[in-house]
Image (tube, rainbow, N blue to C red; front, side, top):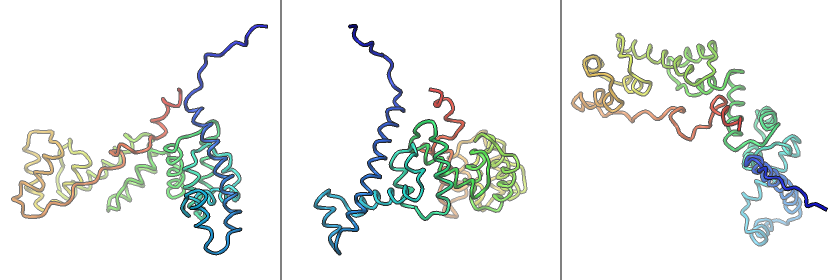
Length: 270
């Protein structure tokens, strides 16, 4: 009898990770169920000692398991979600949230065909909450609206974003930048150099001597970098005022920002 033919086909790492996460999820719910049983059986003051003695666990650790089980009992779909257990813990910790049913439904749809990562699951949760707040718009539109600071021009920028419904970050940024530029130009009562980016515009908003700054911007060799614009705004005035903190990076500047749908398309093909 001939030996069975061995396959040289290797499984995708994402599929293997999905199987591992599936085992972890089943364990979470089973452990949580047993912990609920034990908690109910404990006398007053016995619970913490029992956890420490048997498992070296804190009450918070046990609570995560039990909350996950209660979540799955309330929403049966949770048991079939192909997401890492960390996401289950986070959902269980917020079990009374009004948007939880919509989030679970969105996660179920996103993980219908295969397991998704923590980053992808968090993005789905964030987008679901943004859609509840702002409406059903493309991800790039929603992220741009979410990035808008509470400024006098933000409301009109948000309205135009909703009207245009940009599907890429670049398209959304152009709309936001146009509104921001118009606002700052109104403050200076003059057109500003085309090369000014969004962070530079933030710097120019709080300047006191705008006439001096505008003159230096228009006569300086262009384009300038951020530090040069900062120096013109706050160091070249003789140090009369204490310069404000430098603007924090926008969402798009943060390296750890979850990838959006259009950025993942190439990866999802592999």
